[in-house]
Length: 121
Image 1 (cartoon, rainbow, N blue to C red):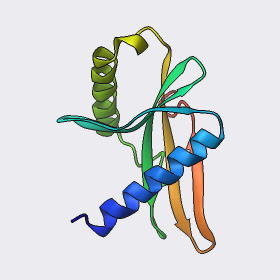
Image 2: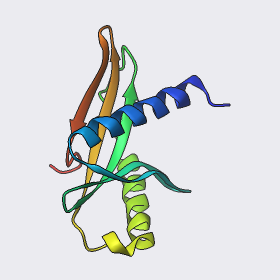
Image 3: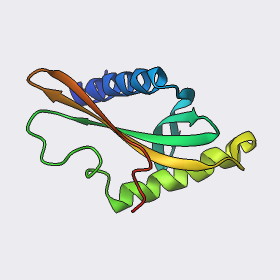
Image 4: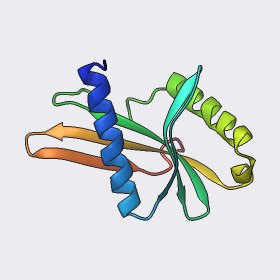
């Protein structure tokens, strides 16, 4: 049985996926997992393979979703993305990027914030 946090995270991933699909992205994989990291969503945005970290933030969270992805998490995501590309050579020459989608609970419902190319700059 999943904890409330796991259930909330899965719901946030579904909402994020639907949000991105409505904006034209195509789902390649969900919950690509390796012992050293998991990628919540792998999607295609035109010619670009996008590795997406979905962050659920409850009311009163100190950090937004983008800022909650620290350097260690970025390393795990990068390693998992490299593994995905090795396992799927049809994508290994395509451009890639890392996005973060933050799903927040507010007094007025859910708020979705999508930050494309979140790990540059």
